[in-house]
Length: 202
Image (cartoon, rainbow, N blue to C red; front, side):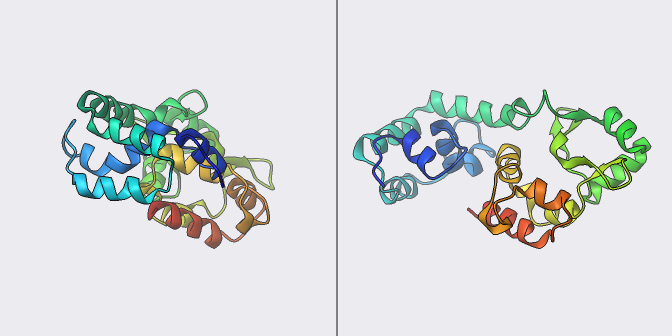
C-alpha cells in the first residue's frame, strides 16, 4: 500500500478517523486527566509515530501536532464535544425514547443502567442514537435484539463516534452486513460483541 499523507492512509485502511482524531487517540488518556499536558511520554509518542510506517512528511505532521500545546488544547476540547456532534441531529431525547418504547422515566433509566439501551451523555441529558431502534415482528418499535450483549462487551470504553461507525459499517465477520442489520435480523450478538471488544482494545 502506497500512501503519501496521513489522511490517505486512514482512508485506505477504511478508518473513520481524521488526522486530528489520530492524534487525539494517541493522547486521549492523558488529556482526559490534565488539560493541555501530555502525560504520555515523549519517547512513547516517538515510538508510536516511527512504528506507524507512514511517510516522513506525514510523521513530521504528527510530531508537529504533538508538540503544539495550543493544538493539544483544541484536541482536548474537541474530544469533550465530539461524542454528540455527529449524533445530536439524529439522536432521540429521553422523553422521545420513553414515548417510542412506552417506558416510564424510571423504566428507561433502569434499562440504561442495565446496559440494555445505549445512551450518550450530553451535559445533564442523555441522547439515544436512532440506529439502536427498529420495528419488531409485531410492528412495534423496540431496541435491537441482542444489543445488551454488545453493550456489555466494553462498549463504554469505545468513543461514541467510533462505536456508531462500527455498528453501521458492513463487516466481513457478519457476512457483509452491518452489526445493526445483523442484530435486526436475529443474528447471534456474540460476533458483534467480539468486534466491539477488538475496537476497545485497539
